[in-house]
Length: 298
Image (cartoon, rainbow, N blue to C red; front, top):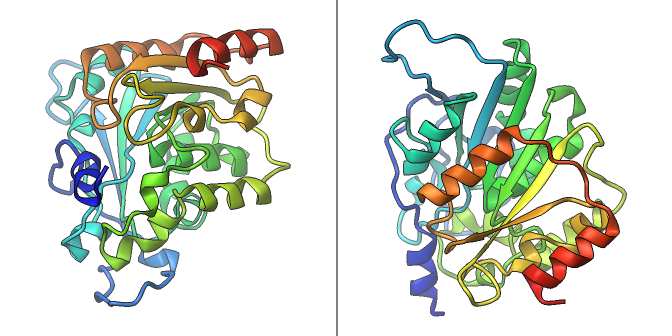
């Protein structure tokens, strides 16, 4: 895969205009790669279902689902790299939002990609947005993260028990990194974000967090996307359901998809709709081995 093809495949399938921002202005472009202050990471958080135009008097739900997008590669524009924008599947009219809205209130989260995944999850405004849901009275807070968004969701759940997160669903998340993240295809502003998605970057984080576990009170699942090449074309299946998560008995569910289309199909919407509400107990070692053979071939 060439750098240009990688850039095309990782461009978001659709972006809407920002709906609500909570951050200072974007930093001035710089040709040198720098680690930004997390106060410079812009975020966007919006309730997308039921929307303000909903008819009737919808009953308030006890569950909030937060959709978190992943990498959107911007090789030509510094402004787009640092400005948060919702993907098409995070918008009120998407099939995914419609499906989730049957059982839950739905929120969408976007963020500037000018800091590492770990920084965005711990030191930006992202935890504050999730904390606000608990303050609003939701009894269940479910994070559904695609690609790098799944890593952000994981770190939020592992590091912030006070946020009230009850469930995390990762979709095509590079828990063990992706080789394509190392390609030089983006503006300098996205350097720290991409570096945190490489295999070496993720291994460093996993080594540093070796004692971290998914809290017992948080249901957790990995949706493993595959298009017949050992992964979804961007992230290998072995990275999506990594060894450290297997060791914790985290369940995995297959989805026939490419990385780009993982959140946009009716099949994906139906699977995620079920995983948000159905019990997700940890698997015993036998079940993990059986599923590993079926999903990973070993």
